Image (tube, rainbow, N blue to C red; front, side, top):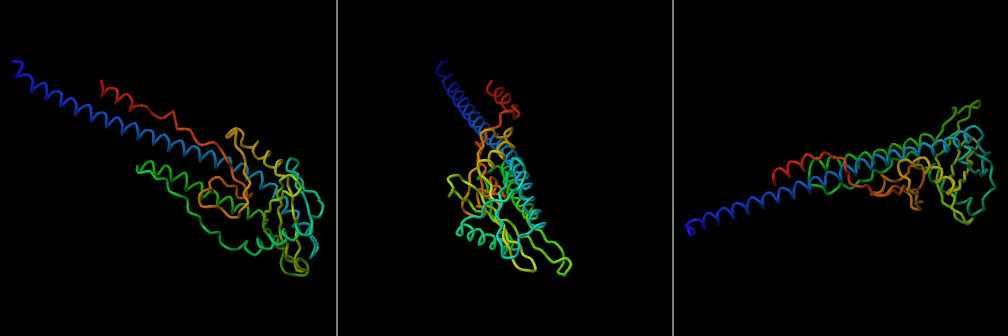
Length: 285
């Protein structure tokens, strides 16, 4: 009798082993898929918070830079002159500053002239890397955040340019044409503390003039980070020396300033539906 039951027991053990192995594989695949989905959701929410933070800071900076455009349009320097100013961001005011050194002044003029010439040139489109996910739903979710971040950068950049450039009057004797060019940015640490200089060229019928607007980086960065303290309490702003938006960091860059927003990485989402846990538990039971 025992000899007859041995094949049945072996067959039962083999079937049980196959079933347990298949269930283990299904469990592993489901849990891994859920983990990937949680990462994708967390990344999408994280990018949404980053975009919100960047828009807040861009709005704050934009109001300061719009003041410089208004001042330059209403009271431009005389042709051939250079007007130095400094910005007090906390008071939203612009005041006259000491004229920079001859070398610094020449560097600002060259940067302003370069921005003036290139203000009507098309901005090259940078490619945003595609996340290496295989699931179509996750890939669509991840790409949506990356594509929106790249698109928002271009929108912020165009918005800043429209606020910086001004064209007044027609080319007549009563209302001479005045073209206020875009702002170029130059970092300066010669005074021991980091500062950011904005420079622009102002073109009128009598010739060109230039103006600069200096702002202390510690004061400006502290003001901007206070705008996003509820989203990223430990965020920081990192100055960028090179010009242009890199291919892989447009989602963190400010368009109005050569600076990058640095925030902690996202944590996996924890409030996703847990129906799969009950289903797997019932299958194992």
